Length: 157
Figure 1: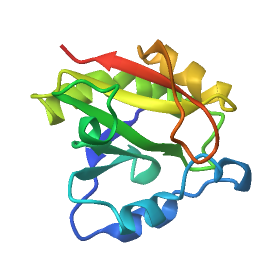
Figure 2: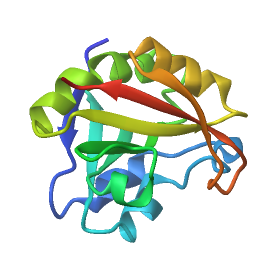
Figure 3: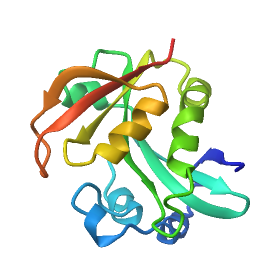
Figure 4: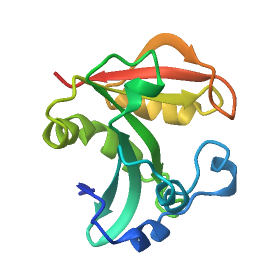
């Protein structure tokens, strides 16, 4: 499957409407259109394309270390990673994660690492991140609204 990662085009928030989550996943993440509607200035949206169809979304938080003391200065944060519910189960999430490091090095050349948190109740997502090269730090983040989360890190240098 050929996937392409690209920044969310300016002035095209309607592209996010194509990416929907099933009800059971809304406990872990808001839909991209909701999340990006109130996003702070330091958050960048990125789409995942399969041909001409947007099939996934993630955001990069350039100010992540300011809000998360476990993230070292010079790092970024991965937020709102999701695949449209009609596309799930096809290996898209794993494909995104496998290509993520190369993409982030190009888009954020100053970043030393990328961090994320994943809910303990979401072992499928944790497994996808591990396949993409993220490592568990051994610490938990307790500030999430849906319970404890694993802290994961991917070195970019």
